[in-house]
Amino acid sequence: MSANEAYRLVSRGTGLLWRGDFHNARQLVSALSRRLPRPGRQADSPTAQAFRLHRREQSRRARMLALVLVPLDPGHVVPLRRAPDVRTACHDVYGPTDTRCAVSLRELLGVIGADQWRQRGIPIPVLGARIHPHYGVFAPTRSEYVDLVAECPLPPTQLAFDVGTGTGVLAAVLARRGIERVVATDSSARAIRCAEENVRRLGLAGRIEAVQADLFPAGRARLIVCNPPWLPAKPHSLLDHAVYDPGSRMLLDFLAGLAAHLQPGGEAWLVLSDLAERLGLRTRAQLIAAIRTAGLGVAARLDARPSHPRAADPSDPFHAARAAEITSLWRLVVVGNGVDRT
Picture 1 (cartoon, one colour):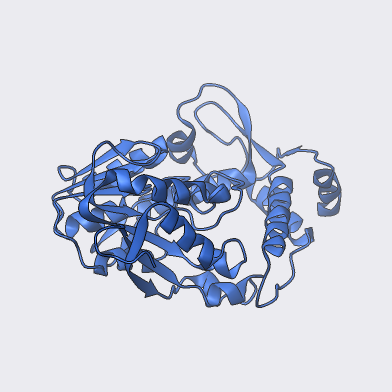
Picture 2 (spheres, helix red, strand yellow):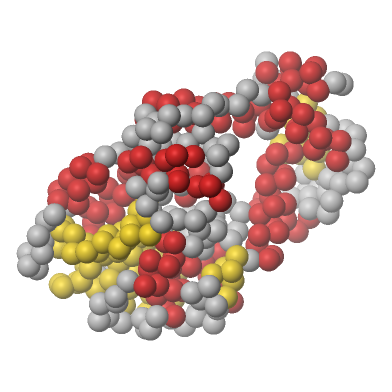
């Protein structure tokens, strides 16, 4: 089958079950990717509509490329020539299985890549150690938000909450800074397992407790940290849930619940990029209004410019917005403690 014929089939929604050489299957996916139209460069001041259209086209591309399938035998064995050994990687993601199935090659390659990340780990300079992300859990490849939590002046406290912990990297930073007990929450059971594994690797199991919860754990703390998904848009994949927050639901729920979970005189650290504002998805006025509506004020703000690769990639259709992006740590307090709402 030629790549052009395969393109015509996947364009109509037809799945292709590959039976030949594994590396040739990868070449077919690459050939299909080259035939799919790519979005053009956006203006320096992109609109929310342009971003949504871009995301829609990305989703369409992903659905079409996912239609190249490969067989998976019991025990997670790929019965193709020159196929890699994916048993451990697939077992970690899918669990044990004794049935035959087919899986999207693009997804399988993602599983393999995630297993490599998990084995190697990501160096975190402020920890002097590596964090090992699991498949589907946001990997801390960007350092500026971790550095902000490492540098912000700590309030006097022995207890902190890390809401939406993911890999547990921010909880580990807080513990390494001297906080005796950190309760780290996440709604994802996969993220909780990931955080627990990293906590054990770092020797912090006695000081960090990972709890599966939608947002806050029970009780109150003098310091609550949250790095929510930064973009108010619809997620299209498992990993997207760590980046996209439809309607800013997690952000707004976090703000609304702070007053009930902060100890008197405590503060919350909200770590948020302004990329949503630069893409026209949310305004600064809307963010400030949400903070005020929750009965909170801004005690201070620390800013950092990211140095992630996409910010310097001119082929990115939203390169200009990413290049100007600023990540901020907002120090929030309950109004009434002598802090102005603004």
